[in-house]
Image (cartoon, protein in one colour):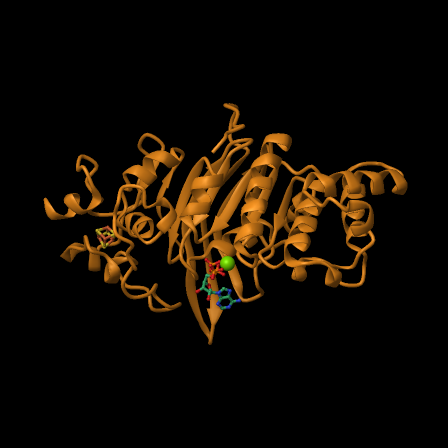
Length: 347
Ligand SMILES: Nc1ncnc2c1ncn2[C@@H]1O[C@H](COP(=O)(O)OP(=O)(O)OP(=O)(O)O)[C@@H](O)[C@H]1O
Ligand code: SF4
Ligand SMILES: [Mg+2]
């Protein structure tokens, strides 16, 4: 982990993002009071199992939610500009459109979806460059080739004229990253950009991210289900479960060494690469609640080893961050124990 963070105010704050989805005639809450912030140059991991609401969080930030979604609340401040995400007026939508691709860009899990199949990939980077900078097309093309080299495309002079279908998954993802950084964004949203790639290419792309962060100083919000990726890339972490923040901290190391939320602890125990203190690999029992099946109390209660009677019916109150750490739990993992298992046994 190498940080290029500065100490000025936050680049981004998200406050109280709550989103409902209409499914089969009923409204279901999929994101509830989600809040986080990011300083310039900071990389924050947004982590959680499948269905926890990671992609919807990113989409809400860019006004790209599916049509059956309603933003109930959510105040976003980015680079000094305030956005009320619950506003659906034309002017509010235009305000978000302006920031999309200029100040904030997004890298998707599946580059084929984001790249236009009938336009050479280089043209798509050129378009992104020209949206931001007044340049002649030939100059923008040279700059696109420079960016393609920066993301590790060695044969950039030829690849610039290729179509997406002619490229491997790893090359397409690199093109996506070049297009995403072409407009010199202050914030890059990444939605599991390496999951569709094989392990070696994944590693290359992760190293590339570290390099680009240093080079561009952009903030990164990195969505993944993999804590090992967060350990490699991020400075801070927000752990989501069933659309709720479970634990969040600006001190990633503290969370990895002593998770305070039982869900974070369980995720760490089930992640081989970050299982640094000799814990046996673990599989979290059961599965996350389906939409509309959320328990009345803590959403993690049916799967939690630390559960007590009150967890099943008491709503977990919102907590204010203490020393940069937020923990939404009625019975957090004790921080004075020498290991996670001892913490449980000595209770
Ligand atoms: N358009 C939609 N209609 C109905 N349900 C949806 C829709 N989009 C998302 N969901 C549901 O909302 C929840 C959160 O979805 P989201 O895509 O944000 O999860 P995620 O954390 O990104 O998961 P994954 O790791 O699998 O990508 C899931 O239960 C998902 O099935
Ligand atoms: S509130 Fe209770 S059930 Fe939920 S994570 Fe904490 S201990 Fe477990
Ligand atoms: Mg997703």
